[in-house]
Image 1 (cartoon, rainbow, N blue to C red):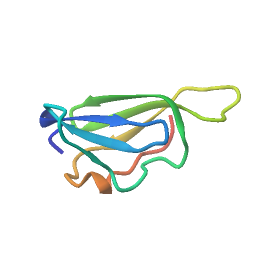
Image 2: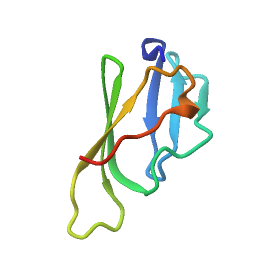
Image 3: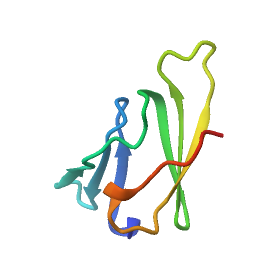
Image 4: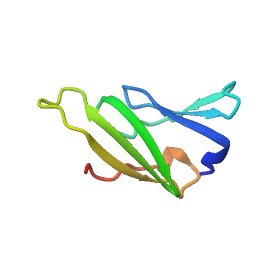
Length: 85
């Protein structure tokens, strides 16, 4: 996916959003990428890997985890998150 022409965002419920550079149009990913609701989500893209850093709602004690998502597939509805680290 060409992330240079768009912005990515994620909500607490785990929905991904893709915004145009001018922020006038956006698209919502059709499927959730995580099986949990998240707190404090952050996104970092390095080359073709998206790092999703978050804390899961309900975790006691809270812990920060990350998952890798390979961006090679241009269809973002087919992205899959790797295991928690």
